[in-house]
Image: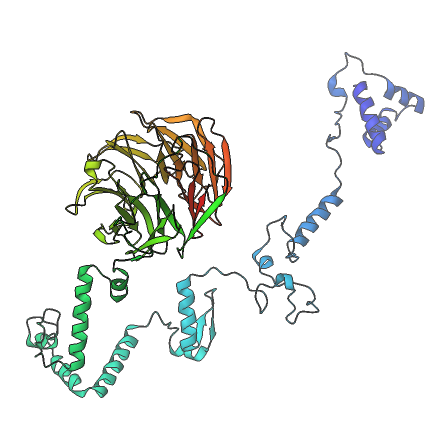
Length: 614
């Protein structure tokens, strides 16, 4: 108890509060004696044997262990929050640290008006010539409805839907009607007005309509219904007696009949009929010499002087005559004394190589650009394919069209079977993904090879002409047995690109394919048609252009045009670039090595020029 008493005394001293109970107890104990006795009685400890009920209970005051809190900061924070909930939001700030109310978000901008703006809106807040316009989410149909209603009646609903703007008197008179929700009574009134207006214009028709409007007008079995619906879709046509045609009508009917017959023949009108006329012009001095030899006869002394080919170094001649770009060139087979060219000006020209170096004949039969040309084995005939969807078989000497073939699609490549006994077989790769085979003697389609998934670009015969390889825009190569429309080899890899030009190596063991990822790939022509990964020719830029690839006659060099007008030469064994010639302005699309003169090359480009290099 003394220990507890001492704790209580200390706490009282700290709090600065006197203990009244202790004083009263001291006064009761020391009432009869002196002061010293009373103090001794207070200080005397209780004996352990004394009764507990003799001493009164002592209560300790409650103590809190929590630290003292300053209420000033809390009150200031609460006041700041309350103040922020009522102050306007600064429109320039990008983040709001509290949840603003609706009134705060839609409150007008506070502060003085801009001193240099007429309406007080600063330039940064302006998104319309009249100031600031807020975005409103409203359906286009509802906007059109209110817009048309305002322009017709003079009032419209506020986008909030709570009020109307405009002519209030007309609003009440029309019962807030819009242009799209006209009531039934208004619709009936308008129909009545329209019928009255029609009756004023044609009284007879109105009388007939009134007579047909009886009580049974809606009953299909009644006479009134039949009278009203006598012009129904099931009624027979009124017979009109054909009178005599006037002179103008007769003239028009005759012209119409002529145009119809021309269209049935294959023409498309007068403009195409003029273009479709096949004709040819000879530009030489005479078609036969003093010995009676034709102008296409090869010179007797034309033969290869050397089996070793060399890269050309200089530009020796230019053939210019096409008014647009040149798409393809082909040397006369085996001799090369003539050069055939296909132009985008819809003309095919043949040029002299050995003597005069001039144009010998122009073949005009296509109405659009010529895409591809192909000589027969002896050179006396050739094929031309144009974007006018026609394939024409020409006589080289006379310039006459022997026959014309068409499927209604654009032919991208034409090829004759190289076998001497199959020179009447024509193969053509079309824009509709098919390879079509014609017998030119009968003019009939004898076979269709239909497996590609894109337009066919090339046809190349391999394996002694028993098979042919085709490439397409579907980025694949397919190998076919001639005459059998079943693919025997399908080559397609994820890394492959379209191959718009393919050439056969002189030893017929390899194919060089111009890939549109700026490289030339080599495939074997044996059974597997495997890619030769060791041979790859690159450096030129051909992406997007069908630049021709070719070999030198001895097989030592590979050459190709490119999209920048250059002609590239690579060494076949080392695959290194041997030489580059700047040949044309624009694209160098075609290149051909002369079959006899081993160092001469012809190139053609989209600048309309054909150049000869030695």
